[in-house]
Length: 145
Image (tube, rainbow, N blue to C red; front, side, top):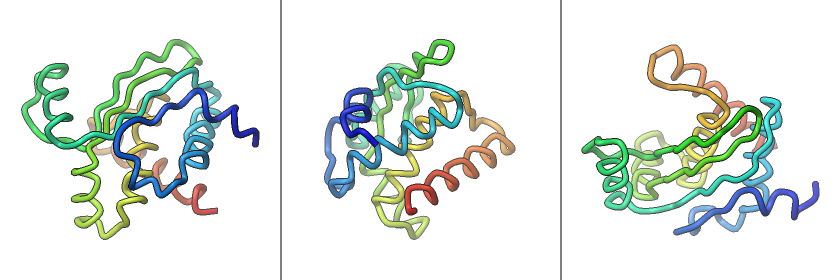
């Protein structure tokens, strides 16, 4: 795959230490998610921040006063995917311990989760969550191959 093709449409900001230098293959995976859904990513910003920063976004943008691992703002129009994803590195580390995953795997799962939201998946109901988890697992397995 052409590296530049995957470098320009997804930008990752903030604390990248958990990514272990795997930025290009992660971007490739996120593009594959969109492609599998017959969509094209025009621009996604992934912001890796701390709990307090994400809590402030949650309060100001969504009027929610609680910690979360991810907030996704979807600007997708028709078949062109665009959005901002904010991920709490603090929550990723805690979730990794809770679910007995590596922090890298947990971060990759949450990044896939955000892109799946941009592809139209929801997770408000139990059945929606089950579908979302199944899709996350599919792409985590693909990444491992």
